[in-house]
Length: 392
Image 1: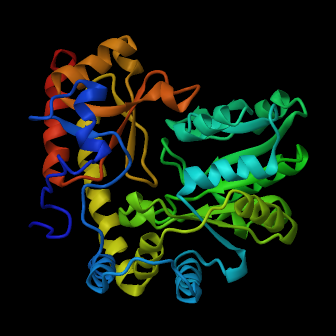
Image 2 (image 1 turned 180 degrees about the horizontal axis):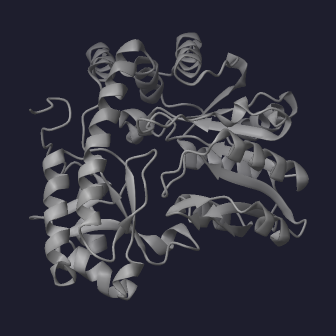
């Protein structure tokens, strides 16, 4: 039985698409038959309600400045309350040019050059990029492996702190490990930040993409952390509209909010009208129904991919609790990083993300994007089995 929303293969070549148009140049994977499984966007159309909003804009044909954000703010409030049990005030909301921009603004507003910024590694590679560019120091706190999944090691991290650290950036749910942090773990993060007087930036961009059987807890629902908490969320990952470069930084604390707002004003940052219109449409009952179908489809892709990886001796796919990004450990093959990567790229013609870009602990991993039509996931699985057939 086919799924009309997600099964059709959409040709993205020649559309200035980073994921497909840059695949051959960056990875050497041929465009003719390569499968792009690196950049974290989806090969699906957004929900019809989002497409309709964009069509209405183009039908009107005048693309001026956006004003009156009440409907947009109300949509964000509705989504957070109904999907995440989190009630917010519209005055808390800032709109940035995506959450990498939001992260950079937080670093700029709440730290100084030379300050330490704590990352739980391996973690989303853009964090380290903007930290370095801002002249801050990356403090890598390695996640521990326990029964094949990542856990937090606060005792080890406490011993690492020197007092020069000013901020912790949390990835919740976690990318690339796919963890949905438990309430107890999040309480531990809050306590850690209080012990070391850290501003806590919680990037929750994957919070809508949670696999069945797991529940995401917004960091804002953890008691006693509001006076040092910056929340970040976006429609872009959930609804596959990353090209709008639109994200929300949501700050309940008045002092932190004033400081962040002053930096936004000083840098002259204002929102993209296309992103605001599309986000307003997405955060709706129609958008919610689409997300429910999407997650069920992604869960099916996950099961197919994990079963294939389990059939290849030496490969292990970390249990995926959220996101659509499979994190595969190749250490059991005994191969060097260069050898197993070459098999994936040169033999299987698959372009994944390289593990070392995510920091300490990622050296023997590759990250695979499963948000693509099932037939491509199945083809990728067959190619991986063939590329490592000598191990079977």
